[in-house]
Image (cartoon, rainbow, N blue to C red; front, side):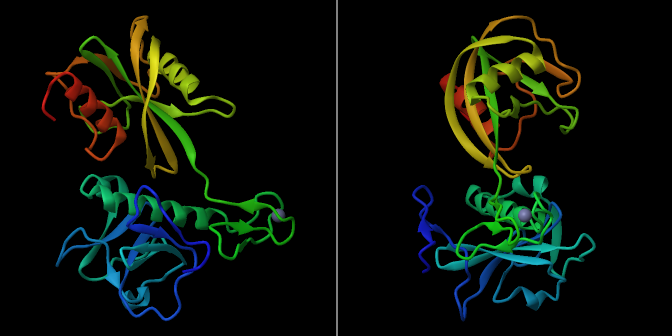
Length: 285
Ligand SMILES: [Zn+2]
């Protein structure tokens, strides 16, 4: 184990690593991406992440490779393929947004990590300050510009998501990009220089035109669309009439717990917030 490897206190099964161990003899897990599509198996354990000794067994045109670390003794890698790569026999590319809804939470966490490391590698090949080709910093998940010394670490963008309650009703809203009939919670990115709590109040005001009170922290979730850390809150309705902005939000309503629309998948923090509220209201989830 290199000195940079460390135990993750929350998920002790996965140990982050930077350099792959020399002379691997066991099969590894390969998180293989073509843009925002992930390669999964279609027979013998369909939906599973490919497990191979070496990615080259698949004969794919690999652009870049990153070592992620060890999951219960199994090495994990992320791979970037070109847009025109074809799936090998017995496998298929699935859109990440579709794939995640069918994954276990543990698998989603790893895919999440893998796609963000792959994206960081892909988008930091050159220094954004002086344009020189960057080099990988030994032993760190970082890149360095050999010319001006600028450093490039994976970027994480904080975003807030909030469940607004009004008695036993909750506010759910629809983005024009959502699947038909699906509603979710108000969410948005934290702006530079802004606290997460202020972002909650601003986003709610901008998107649906109401005021809230008692903004309370709920929990966080890493979210790979594209590199967010979703910070979950609950809040109580204070004043105002719902007024969707017509741009990010095409419709928003108060929903009773016993008459909910189509909701986001179980893995998402929005659904965890909603399910938590339903439990508080004494409903089975
Ligand atoms: Zn530079």
